[in-house]
Length: 393
Image 1 (tube, rainbow, N blue to C red):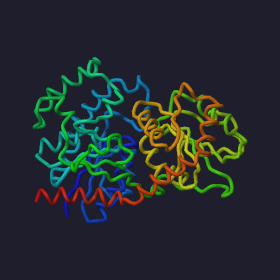
Image 2 (spheres, rainbow, N blue to C red):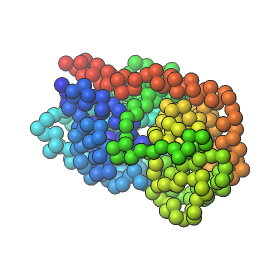
Image 3 (cartoon, rainbow, N blue to C red):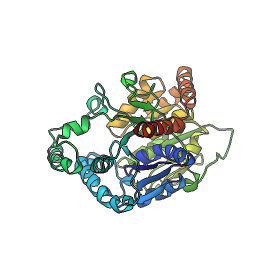
Image 4 (cartoon, helix red, strand yellow):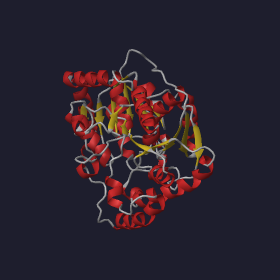
């Protein structure tokens, strides 16, 4: 059996999509190791992999706010993270060289490590992939190459690439298409999905049981509809939204489960209405199994999980990628896209009622759910990894 080394990016939206694949590879008898900061060690261990502990340049990135100020210079931090992680994993892997490296598209350290040691690799996309004709950066620009910090990062990247046996061409580094990639989305949801060829495997979401580290949840009543509201683990800078949600749905026909994240003390919202359950975090997969609708920031994890359980959405994006997701949800008739500036008590209430009453949205979501469940994501992804290993032998 092979030694498969995952290099992950230390954020929930990047780690969670890989866990089902990790479990499947372990089940098949492979040795699986995965980089992990302290926060993610329990997740990696629960999936059956050996954690490769390291200290991240990003710190507790899984808690970091999605704001322009917080994300300024992210490329420089990605570069420093990559250089640092290679140094930190060398001792761990020196006595057991991996047969293949699987790396998140933002975990440049996986490319650096595999390049330095001549180890084959595969790329993982927990969100949109890119090819010669499509990239989410081009469609929804997040940073311009003229930004001073981006220019600085490109200069430093040019200097360090040769030390990892990679060409000193930063644009080629970003534009290179991997020999084989796994995308954790269904092709039908991906923008321009039909332009992606056999180099890309669309596994869809690879969900797995998280109760070992998240606990579980059951509805208080089976008779009332459940409304899940969450702006994600990094929700910050908009505490007024949760007050808006309480005003919109307090004492309504809904049983509301609202996750406010790490940047707001629920006590600041006062005593919630009787039909509200307010927590920092909730076991999202459990809640979605009972939810009738999801008001979400539109992170790709949340979007995929919602569709997997057949739950339509009202998407209120906080950043560009989430805006891309919200627009895609609306474009495919899977829910509504609501801009932050347009979110009021009335517009939120109206968007929810419109989605619930729209039979076409219900039908579209159920079709997507059926299509996603027809694909065994972990098996498809693991088959792709094993096929790549076989091609190397």
